[in-house]
Amino acid sequence: MSLVILLAVVVLAGAVLSVQAAINGRLGETVGVLRSSLLTFVVGAVTTGLLILFFEPAQAVSLLDVPKWQLTGALFGVVYMMVMVGAVPVVGTAVATVAVIVGQLGMGMLIDNFGWLGNPAIELSSSRVLAMVCLGLALVFMYRSSVRRSG
Amino acid sequence: MQTLDEVSGAAPATRSGLRLLLLPLVILAGMGLSVEAGLLGPLGEQVGHLWATLSIFGVGSAILFLLLLFAGPQKGPALTELPRWQLIGGFLGPMYVVVLTLATPHIGIAMTMIAILSGQVGKSVLIDHFGWFGATRKKVNAERWLALVLIVVALILIARG
Image: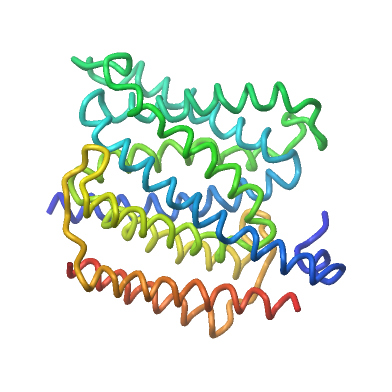
């Protein structure tokens, strides 16, 4: 039951993410990639900081205690944000989203399969590969419909 | 403001080339998201989900601040002159990151991404279709619906294992 709730929350987070992509694409057009990204990250940091102050229970291990490579996630986040802010106005929200998905799932399956970065290993099955093929085709359809409209 | 259709009408060849150039870049950015999620899950288990999220936004803010500082003056209006609703993207980011740290240790990164995308794609097609949040309005044609169907098939395939 809790797994179903967790999945529903994750699906909702996906919807939220695409709303954010649309807003930031618009914002980036107006004020530039750097400023819109900085705004997003600062507001995110301040919001998270407030939540920690008031709601986070004390933790035995702090961010300063973990290996430094575990803190490099932000680098990928910054790169992602800047690419999306630049790309969404050009390729459209839907096409950009599908391209991200292909990269996300491909890398996600690799990490799961080999248990990289300290994650539990989940074996790559044939249905997972088939799912990737479906997503590749979806990307082709999204891209073709996008090109035809502007041509 | 210049819309997408006006721009592509002016220089279709350049736009098409730019698109092809941008697509692999966007795919790479997506791969980075999975690496980020892969780092976040174990980190959140150790230091707490909100602290893991703060590491993302704190480090990200610092890097972007430095980049902006050395990039020089920026064109366009001041952030304070923008419509307020354009600033709410910043509140949405932490929601996504917290959910990532919560979910990946329990259901794996690929499953998490599948669940994320089922919300993501449905929503983004709707945004294009209705032109929500100031995005350029695009008619959702048969090919896009077909793409959506393929993604649903992919969802079912991965959910079944």
